[in-house]
Image (cartoon, rainbow, N blue to C red; front, side):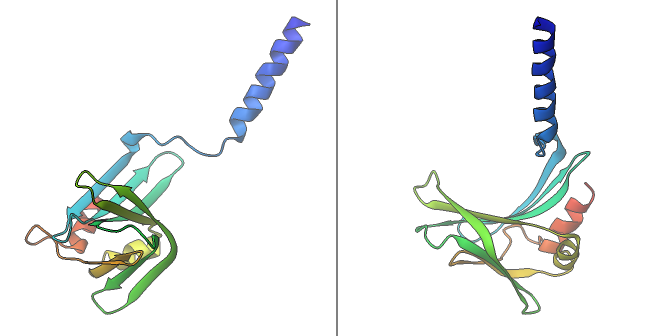
Length: 153
């Protein structure tokens, strides 16, 4: 009887384990490429995660602001005047060390979007209602270089 009970518990544990569809993300498989902007401690980051089962690219936008309201939606204004809206994208707000608020928003880069953004420049992005002009801190830095640098991973 004890053997049957032990086998039954092991069988249930095995089925529970097999049903989990989320892979625990190992930091070893993630590489982030970030460029700082001149405006209010802002940055643009390309985050790449590659494992045996996941291959994901994200664009992460960050800024610092006095207020923290209307934290939904991301908008990108491209150099050619085109505006890309991600209305359902969540923007996370947290308090920073300087008693201001950090706004961080991200969205997944599909292969088409990755290709499009790697060939142009973002001149402005919006996190919720906060507009951030894209002016890189380092001379000569731009979005195309950030994509080229991250492409090697």
